[in-house]
Image 1 (spheres, each protein chain N blue to C red):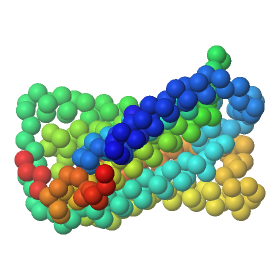
Image 2: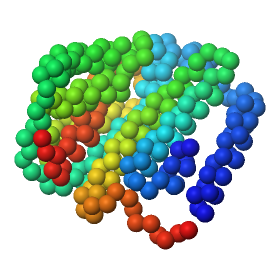
Image 3: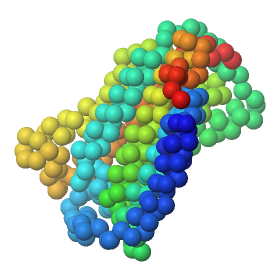
Length: 84
Length: 218
């Protein structure tokens, strides 16, 4: 669902939200797969912690860029290339 | 047309992914025994903290670097600032925030210390500090940040520099970030403290530098 959102949505802010949705889904899969019918596994949990922090930083940067784009051009979606 | 194709591909992908996940064989490489076995010499007694700061300390070093990079990007994307009056807030919000912010700083300190024994640690504490700063900014206690001055720059960079210095020191004596066992606990606490401060500043900066951008009127 997140992948659909990133590819199809045109409003920039919604694209960022969809990207985050994708990332959170991936994190959940990572942690869940590592622990199947067993005790918790700390290694992928640590990896996912790092991943969450990096995703937050990337979201902040994406939001800053989106805001700057909006300020410079007054629009909230990138110009479509005329694809079908 | 493009919409249809993308949605079709996604819908087809989901059951494939689900069956693949359900049918996966158990992982051939399970690191849990090694993590538990070496916990005694790692300097902390919580497994996730040991993984983050000792076994995979290199990842954490790069992580703080990535956060600083994002902050530089945010600084670059924010134009020159104007003087904006801080936001006025309702009485209830303001009072609750004045009560909550010192408590949040205290919680951050506790999380930093508890990281050795329980879930916690530098990144969690830094996140709480960042949230406290954003909360204070929302009610007008802390104005939006301008171009960072000397102290702010020093604070932001200090966490990364301390971690890098420890990494360089251990590199001189053997493998990268391989703490000598008697010093491991102390080194981890020092690194975590510097990281917490830097992270709190970095995360607050990610919001507060933005907030003084193009015309956030009160």
